[in-house]
Length: 352
Ligand code: NAI
Ligand code: MG
Image (cartoon, rainbow, N blue to C red):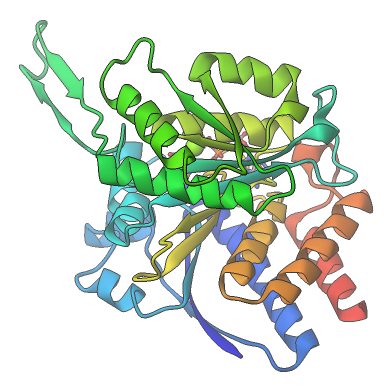
């Protein structure tokens, strides 16, 4: 089996953790014998934007569309405004390839200390609508720079867009032991798009009678995540809400450096993209101390998507032995470097 993977390390620690993740994938391939990865590196980054005026070259998305999957680091630089880097690279790919389902598991890995009491009960998957909503890019500014300036940021929710993410979330919930799905919106204060979300959710729910459902307002759900983590399983929320909730989930389960993300194009028309949840981390970039575990877990999600379930399970088991061993980077309270952690997991994979 051979898989063609487009690799976009991007900026800051994205480069460090993706390099580490490629080493782990190569170790898995070597170990299994009949598995191959063909990595093609793309230098699409803020550096490239500063030099050439663009993140993605002409025809770039076409080229990318021919890969089996995309392994992405992070984008964001102190020399480029964030709304430019995000839209011109990451969102250009997510929206260009209709990766409408963003999937973010959260779980406390063995040996990882969460400051939250009861954190061992966290076993969630947050499903984030990834193609519209608050990040539709719909808005504008008038009277720019004047005292009466107005900026609008208009969320767009389409019935089709809402229905497909709910269906995706129901199917995912159905595949899990607890079969439970929590709907998150803010349909008391926001009367249109959010009410559409709620209505479509309950329509779709009729097709999945074996999934138990409940609903929360986005403010209230943050307290439930902290105070009663064991009561939640799969959570479906809008682009902005799930963005925030998944950072909270990552922090509650130990560190932003551990959590993975899949940006899925469920129809399979375009490749899906896999990335750690964190950004380019200016404060630690270039120091060799970034936690690469998020990038490893991301690789496991990518393997699962490529149909390599057994290899994905082998990788998850190796990640759990690694975190359980106590060899941890600074964000988890340890002193190990990115390289120490990567070497340890590769050696473990070779030994198994
Ligand atoms: P960030 O995730 O880069 O960092 C937040 C904090 O978590 C920092 O203290 C950082 O050191 C720590 N951290 C993150 N990942 C870590 C890891 N693997 N190991 C150890 N510590 C880790 O978020 P921040 O600082 O808000 O954003 C920095 C830049 O990254 C911005 O330009 C932002 O736009 C961009 N960004 C990009 C994302 C993406 O490409 N998907 C996601 C989030 C932010
Ligand atoms: Mg975020």
